[in-house]
Structure formats: structure tokens, C-alpha cells
Length: 423
Image (cartoon, rainbow, N blue to C red; front, side):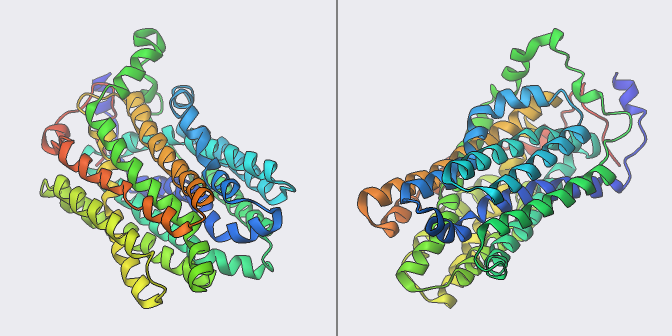
């Protein structure tokens, strides 16, 4: 098998188009999830939602990820990346049109839950495409590209969604339908341009169930100390982020009379800076073996800037704070690369490990607005609720102090079942 893999031709630059298109579709899903905060005030007025119901709605997209991420990945990792991505994108498109039709809260809640499940079901394709097309040393670049696209698409969505909503006469249902047409276009593009690397499409499934069983793949992917520490770092950061994108526009509108357009711009700036800065920070940290130091500094900066955003209504000051808050999110490529570089890990185990990190981020993203909504309902103080949720990003300090970043050793380790490096 190893000889067969080594005989494969070098991968062309087409791999960047394939991976870029896949990542674009993935981050577009997160854009739909995170722009809910901009739509939430008009949705709440239309459907008469309580703060607790708003929190439930903000977290609904992540419930299925938390419950189904691992078993769903074990199942979907049997399928090719091309087919898996096509099917999940088509289902996500249908879920968006259901959200745009939702006549009552229960339908909207269920459709957002189903949308979140399509996002997690798609993730094994990322692991397979990355391993098929890219060398180990290029993985940090791939994840940096993911961060850039996240910043551009999610940040652009936060910036544009108030204008889209206004263009539709504050009709949130039409906004969801517009998202549905976007996903329809992405589905068609992937169907036309998406491609697996020839000769490697079956290698990802070389660990057959009969050899070690699904339990063996599960143990191989999850029985990793550094993976759990990586997940803990993601947990705290995503709790704060999801709470702020869900409730910060409401806080600024009620306490400082800051319009949704300005709130969207403030949040978008942070996301954009984090996306663009992540590529440079991740590569610098890996090259100089300073991952631990970056995580400690960026975790502290994130918590501090979230607190700072709560105590001023000055747009210029908030823009400066949001800039530094966004820079703190440059940690993302460092942590998301950990599942790919665990020593001796096999292709389907990588899919399980990667889905575990997505599951943990979904757990944090779900808990953030949920906890914030219930604290607000109990205390009647939204600012206090967001203040409390500003401190979980300090979990990045724990990750930075405890994860064993041995990039050099890991890069020299190639697993027998993995594809040959791309040129």
C-alpha cells in the first residue's frame, strides 16, 4: 500500500481551488449561525420571544453537533468527500428555506437544529481532502486559509446582514431565504468543481471495520491528552464569542442606542481581523515553536477586550477594542491543527479527532447564548450576563500551558495509511 501511495503523481495547484471552495461552503454555514444576533431583535418582536427563548434559538444550531458529532462522523467518514459535501450542502439549503418559512418558534428552532447537524456531518470531508491533497507542513497553511475565509465571510455577513435585513423591509424570513439561495449556488459550484485527489479516494477508508472495529477508530481518535486540552481551549473562547454575537447588538441598542448596523460593523471588524491575522500568527507560532506563548497572551487579551466592550458606547473606542479582540482570535489555526499532527494518527481517526474539536466548539457556542439568556432572565441585567460570560476564554491559558507542541517530531511522522505528500 505504501508503495502504491508513493507512486501517485504530485498534486497540482488545483488543490487550493478544491480546498478553498470546501472551506467557503463550511464558513458560510457558520456565517448563517453567527448572524442570528443581528436578526434576533426583529425575530423576537415578530414571534414574542422571551430572553430564555432567544438563548435557546441562539444555541439550537449546535445541539445536534454536541449529541451526534462522534457517531455521525463514524458513519459519514465511510463516504467520499465529494458525495458527502454535496449531500450535506443540499440538506443545509433545504433547512434554510424552512427557516425562511417558519410560522412559529418551534419550526424555526427545529430547522436551525437540523441546519447545525448538516454542518457537523460535513466535517469528515475536510479531514480527508486535507490529507489527500496537502503535505503535513502545509496543514497550518490550510487552516490559516480557513481562518482568513472565516474572517471574510462571517465578518462580511455580520457587516452586510443589517443592510440585507433593511433591504427586505426588516423581513427576517426573506433574509433566510436569501441565505438559502446562497447555499444553493454553493451546492452547484461544489458539484461542478469539487474533486477528490485521483488514486487516494479509497485510501481514507483503508482502516476497515473488520480490522480494528469502529471502537478502535474511536479510541485512536479520542484517546489523546492533547486533543482534550485543545478542546478545552476552544470551549471557553466559543462560549464568549457566541454570547456576544447573539446578545451584544441587543445590549448596544437598548443601553447606548447604537444601531444594528454599527453593532454589526463592530463585531464584523473583530471577526475580519481575527481571520486575516490568524494565518500569519499561526505560521509564525509554529515556525518559532511559540504556540504556548501565543495562546497565553491571546487568551488574556480576548477576555479583557470582551469586558471592555461592555462599558462604553463610543463607536471609535469600540472599534479599537474590537480590533484587538479580533486579533486574539488568531489562535484558531494553532489549535485546529492539533488533531492533524497527533503522533501516529490514521485518516479516519483524524476525522474523529477533528469532529471532536468541532463538537466542543459547538458545545461552547451552544452554552454561551444559553447561559447568557438564563442569567439575564434571572437578574434582568444583560450587561452582567455578558460580563460573566467574558471570562471563559481564559481556558486558552490552560491549553497553552499544558499542550505538548512538538511540531518538529510530529511532522516527521507519517502514518502508513496516509496519502503521499503533495508537491
